Amino acid sequence: MSLAHRAVRWGLRKSPWILHFNTGACNACDIEIIAALTPRFDLERFGVLLRGTPRHCDIMACSGPVTKQIESRIQRIYEQVPEPKLVVAVGTCATSGGVFDGLYNVKSGIDQVIPVSAYIPGCPASPQAIIDGFAKLLKTLEEKK
Image 1 (cartoon, rainbow, N blue to C red):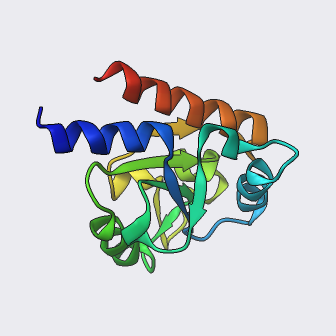
Image 2: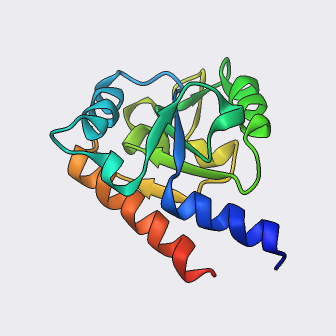
């Protein structure tokens, strides 16, 4: 592993920047993701910062099922994320399609379109579960040294 690659992995472990992407959820998981970033739950203590562009993020936090309308958009945004790309599926809809699975315009969970690194179940996923999921994801990055 080159020195530059190790430096990028270190930066990712110590201060991951996330992009929150809603693929068509009911907004319950979106509210919980934002709540996890507030001072009450303080996801920022792990260095996690919310960013508004895929070109500056390390992790995509996706909520909601993948619809046929959003499929090409989520793939395009995923391609804009620099390497190493990590995706976190937040909520039951993002992990399996949830209550929307089987509808005519819903493909299913996020993993049907892009590779997912971590799954955070729940309808909606609580801020504590989101923090736990991100902490475990960052811990697996440390173990992959």
